[in-house]
Image (cartoon, rainbow, N blue to C red; front, top):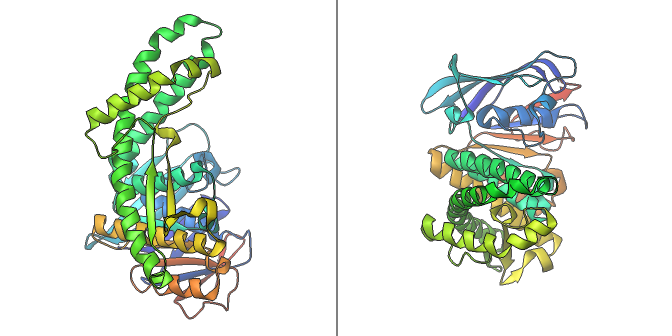
Length: 367
């Protein structure tokens, strides 16, 4: 699969942009704050309906504009197709079109243009807090499993309602009468999340271990461990078992949640840890080991997506090469001999032999 061209209107700092892309490597160069990452964001948004930076759709619309337009021509599934998103700054819902026909949700373009993003922040994700690691896993899983995306959204919706009940009980104790209903639903949907995550992290860890073995010359054994609530003894268990164990866990924290007026535990606190030769990378890994392991995880994600969709996903490298030493740069560059790749860089002469160079300056393409 590949993105043949893209058209942007009033997206971020782009008033009007049309670009054709190379089916191989596209090097996007320019100074800082010119719009290079904005372009990657638009490319990723085309196939996922999600921004890897913005919390609200309104942030993607250029200030003062009535709407933003992202349109691309995609070669996938052995034919050319088009995808278009129209985004609005207010509460008006966004619009999606595939091949000119209006669609309802991002699930309608699932698998059409999947992408894997790698940015400097990802290099330290294994040393960061659990929230960043959950975000990394959730983003990858949403691309692989559209049903997971829906379950995750439902879980957070229920969690938000439960949080409101716990806070409102101070003013009206009667609201606690509906708390068991929300707990039951949380456990039902939470069991689905755990089941999806257990299988995903198992596959991701095995694939990443192969890349890390190549990278370390076989000197380090990479292992990934998924961590969920303590009462779940086997995250691969049937959904009814997981649901029952989650109910047990929530019941044991019932008094503490009432006292703190917060949702203290559940799959929304899940995490994963990586060990090298049995030693936790989060606690004891060097900067070099952390970066190598992070690269292995991203390449593994790309491999899983290629296996899922039958074609190589787009690889988006946002200024990540400048953060790496020559050895790690070479390892990544040796992996881009297949599929379409987009690389942002501030140094025009550094990687110009890789493929097509696109110079961006103040939201415009400089010829």
